[in-house]
Length: 359
Ligand SMILES: NC(=O)c1ccc[n+]([C@@H]2O[C@H](COP(=O)([O-])OP(=O)(O)OC[C@H]3O[C@@H](n4cnc5c(N)ncnc54)[C@H](O)[C@@H]3O)[C@@H](O)[C@H]2O)c1
Image (tube, rainbow, N blue to C red; front, side):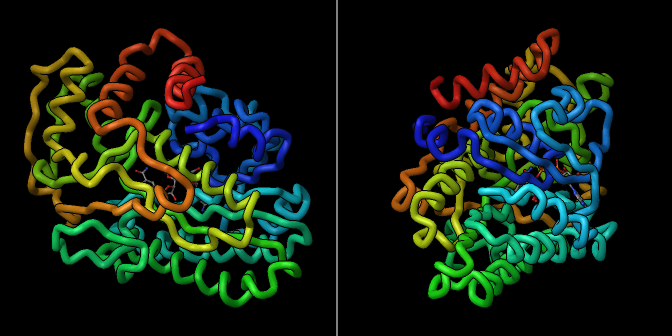
């Protein structure tokens, strides 16, 4: 990806990031720093001591790091209006499928109402603003037909997380029609896109119930790796893939604010899929612990799609985005990050950002 396009559109620009304390948000802070953007973040505090945000001291990459709830619509509006951002990247979410079964109402509130709160705050901005609203590949109704989803496919959601994100898509579309309609662009000057990417992996993720953090914890604690859905096939991506795509789309939107107000899939090549078990084995080999015990635990299984693929032709055609690292590279890069833990986390991330963007 051409970093100069990003630099042109982000240097000295104001970027408001929700979810900046999360896994993707922390990596985004590091890229935005390299781009010379001014960042204000708005999120809850990181949950765990070892979270990437804490490891890189994420607040130092922000002009202001606001620890507050996305459901506090008044504070959110106040902060967005005080900053007057050129861009909003909305990542804040209850992002875990399993947790959504335990806390469905909270998931719907944070994800769906939280997204509406961001859009509503954006509506009150007087100046031009580009909004990148992060949803997921799980927004599609998934009859597991084996074909890759295109953006116009029917929305759905079996579990509360997926449904809450599908609902976000409907809210975003409604704002696009009702308040940010292209016909009135010269009045409101807002452009919004929703972005749908799949499971991401990368260094610094310590969330519960995600495959790589689960493997790393098992290695650290010398316990068996417990797999719930070993044969589930996923399109694995390195975290830099969707983040690069979000930034590239936003850069295009800033240049042509009337041309990209829609949904975009950002997935790996459709044949670049691996099962959960294959990912585990490749990671263990890359980590140098290939004989670590793997246990299959079907008792903790909740419904998860066995197969989920995205067709990202639209992103290729409209913004010339294609994935760079294959699943194998993504796993190896991730293992490298966890193995080299003598080096400071921000330096490990910086090295991978430089590799990814050919800097
Ligand atoms: N990680 C993945 O594999 C993946 C895949 C597809 C889509 N996504 C989406 O990408 C986005 C970022 O995911 P992530 O992996 O970084 O998640 P994460 O769980 O690591 O981070 C979530 C962020 O949202 C913030 N947040 C949660 N509830 C909040 C609230 N009530 N008020 C304010 N902030 C709140 C957290 O503080 C944190 O900063 C999410 O929207 C997620 O649904 C992630």
